[in-house]
Each structure stands twice: as structure tokens, then as C-alpha cells.
Amino acid sequence: MLPWLLSPYHAIVNRLSANRLHHALLLTGTEGIGKMQLAERLANIMLCKLPAEHQPCQQCQSCQLFAAGTHPDFHMLQSERQIGVDLVRESIAKLSRTSQLSGNKVLIIPAAETMTEAAANALLKTLEEPTANTYLILVTHQLSRILPTILSRCEKHALPTPTTQQSLEWLRQQGMEVTEAQLQAYAYAPLKVQSSLSEPGGVQYADFITGLESIIAGNTDETQFAGNWQEEAKRIVGWCQHYIHRQYIRNQKQSALAVYNECIKALVHLQNPGVNKKLVLSTLLAQFSHLDLT
Ligand SMILES: [Zn+2]
Image 1: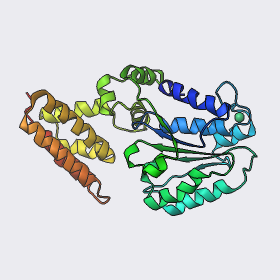
Image 2: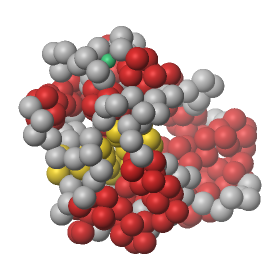
Image 3: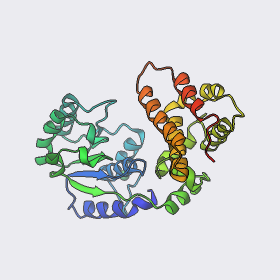
Image 4: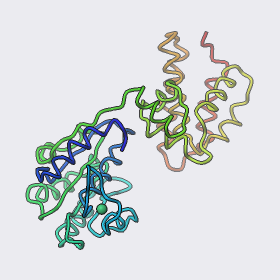
């Protein structure tokens, strides 16, 4: 378990073992701190036949099925876009069946804020009167977008954001030496840093900075970088935005502010599915060339 989530994890599991846990949990907190890891570990222990010392046994049939991703009483309500009413009804129907392993049934709803109003309304009844031995775990990083009717029927757990020190230490344990500036580039979300750095062939932040600074110095043609970086255009624009924002804070130059606005425009263009990413990037990077930041 992620060290900064140990305390909420233990608090929830204590109540689970005492049979005093609410059947509907809402896990909230900023992005990239491990909310889904916590939700899945909770589901694992809720389904385990022989949990001991706050941990699922990882031996029983239930734990083995869970690890294989084939547990018949474990459901995940996921959607590429919004979560619509049909998906919710489908999940409720699954939950209303008798548990196949004669234990608990668990439904996780990641990105619960993406439920449509109709979907949320369809879920209300289950939240009020759940079938026996059923747990629902809603996960969101946008608490304000959860309907009050849903909120009032769940037990809310606001998960802590790790301190910079905790994040850097944890990343080091994962074999990733990261600076505070890098962590900051990922909005202090250690799991975002981890997934970005462990992505095969992904652009490294340090390489990006080297590239961008050589563009600013006028030593490199930006189109080459635009070509190399186009597969990760959104992330690159996010880094550009962060970089220029820091420059603006430092020197208050209008030229920096203008480039910052160009970053926002580029992000808007990238929302368009058919967009030429290389062109968007090279147009933006050209704004950085010969940018006077001194
Ligand atoms: Zn087990």
C-alpha cells in the first residue's frame, strides 16, 4: 500500500473487520495519489475469505480470482466517456444476483463524477437499499461534480496528498530518482510521475527541458522536436505551459504571458481528434525560439 494511504486504509479495514463499514464509500482526493490502488485493495480484502492483519491473504480462491481479474463478484463500472444510465443499470443487475462465491460483492466506480444525472439517479436506490453483502466504492478527484443526493448516501473519505518528501522518497523506492521540479511538473502527483517515467519510449522530462532550452537558445530547429514529441503532444504542451508559467512568475514579461496563452490555445487544438499534432507542436515551439527571458 502507498505509505500516505496506509492510515485511511487501516481505518476503513478496521471498520470492515468489525462489521461496521458503510456499504457505500466515496474516495476523493487529487489526481495521481493512488485512489484507485486503494479502492482495488479494499475490494480485494472485502472479497478475501481469510483476511488477516489488515491484508487479503492472497491464497484463497477469492484472492486468486481477484488477482487474475476474473472474480465473478467483482465489478468495475468504466466508460471511455460519460457513465450513462444503461451501464449503471447493467452493474446494478449484476450486483442483485447472489454472490457466486458466497461472500461479498463489490462494485468500483472510477471517475464517478462522469455519471450523467440519469445514471446517478439510477444508482440512488442501490445506494439507499443495497442488496446484502454488497459494497460500492465510488472514486473521484472532482468532488464538486458529484450530485448532493449521491454524496449524502455515501461515506466520504478525503484522501491525503503526499508531502513532497513522501513522494520523492516513494519514487526513489520505485527506482526513480526525481527532482522536486519534475514532481512539480506533474502537479505533485507521484503516480503520474511513475506512469510517465515507466512508459516505454516516453519522452523524459529532463530530455524535454534540454530540448526546449536549446530551442529557446536558437540552437535547434523546433520541427525536429515536434516530430519526435508528437505522440505525446498533450503532455509536452502541458510541460511547456508549466515552464513558461514559472518564467512569467519569475520575470513578469509580457512575452512569457503571450506564449503561455499560446499553450492554452494549443491544448484546445489538441482536443480535436483529427488535428495535426506535429503542426500544433511546431507552431507552439516556434513561439519559444528566440524568446527573451532574461
Ligand atoms: Zn484471500
